[in-house]
Image (tube, rainbow, N blue to C red; front, side, top):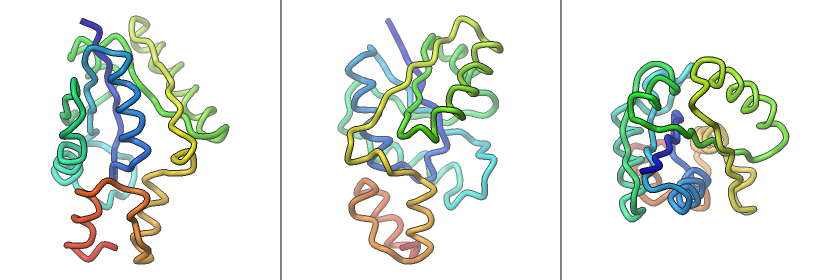
Length: 159
């Protein structure tokens, strides 16, 4: 079985993330969407909230498992018996960071390959950071996040 890990903070999960997952499940027998405990950022949502919203937002996607993890993504990939990590690339600005991350991961675990997937054109500009900024400014999020995230943000006065 060829299994791939799609790690990230998903704070929050966006329609761009969903698009990448939908593409990934076409290439792999199983995709594990791995929600990172450590974000290195000031998250809008705690781990439990991010995990729940990722699960609720991907219920209809076959061959996908949503889990949380702590520590390095490459260590978790090895633990989950994944020899491929998925990363999304939106623009040239993503490329430098993602390439350095892939090279670092390759140094740490040479047996794990990184595969870059490009979202559909309508999601090329979309990021969790943008969604958080829009939410802070009480802008509508309908075109940016899946329904469970939209409902959560509305219910909790975050948008």
